[in-house]
Length: 437
Image (cartoon, rainbow, N blue to C red; front, side, top):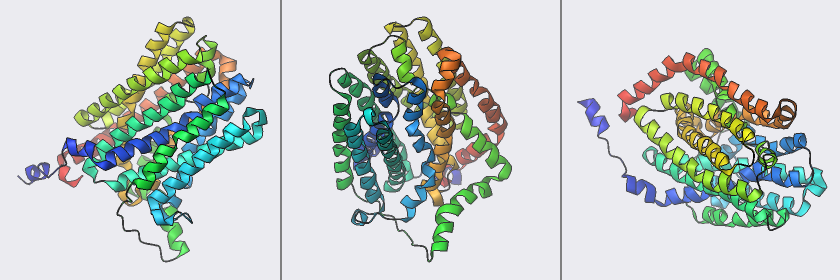
């Protein structure tokens, strides 16, 4: 009977969860996070290619998004420091506004410099990537603190919707505009699009969290830098923690390897126009991805995070083989639509199990820093592979590159099988005592 009482604990209604102001705040902040991501990766690669930059250099420059994989390095600052001049907004909104303004200034610098001044242009690209990653840290922390745990699912869903709209604007809309306007004008327009989320940050409420200031710099360093890392190994033990971290490093490599600068030249070399690429891969693909997100979310709700994670890792990784069909049928719009349908659907399905699993690993005493660390580790190897993608593709061909990305699934699934008993056990324990979640 006590267990039944726990199951019947009060919960927010679905209607309330999705209509609360925080949900729509997260939608607009999701847009703000999604917009800069492609502007320093896939979309940027088109601009570079049109300026005669060779493929190996394109993929290196467009790997500025690798900055996102290292955001855990400065994540503790967002928990324990305030920006002079922004303190009146509070800890979370102050950092949010600071990061958003940094993205705007970086995009305007890219528009002003253009690839004709390549060194300065790359520096401006890194500025956008750095402040975009900083914004992601701030948004994650804001989401966790702004609402109770029972509302977090709705906040993640509305954030994902806004994020994908941001990707659509930075991908499809930017590409279509670039067929009619200069790239520098397009990037200036992308900077103006950031004004909407900046207004959202100014109008949003600051989370009501009591923050205790450390008594000394030594205590601050221990609490903000050392303890979040040490805590993970204390809770799981060195062996399990080490194998888990290795699994996190590998399982999203196939996905990340097709997000960076390699895909833009690939689509162009397959004979597609920017408008065709933008329409199918960005506009159509974004909405297929949203369908995948809802399917992945339903899988998590029905079976928990662990089993859907294994299934979607395999589906997402193997979907890269679809690009071999596109190589065999260059310029075929129907084939491009099929490939994008499979890829984006499986990518969307992988998202909710990934977020749910990473969230289950986090100690709420160090939520922002540990989540930034784990999510960065997940994306790092794929970003590194993307950095060298152009050189690999020039040596092995596009087909050889895609086959190599799929092979990364094999060690990931071997580790998954080894971790199965432990994490399924943790999941069953949480299911048996839902009131303690």
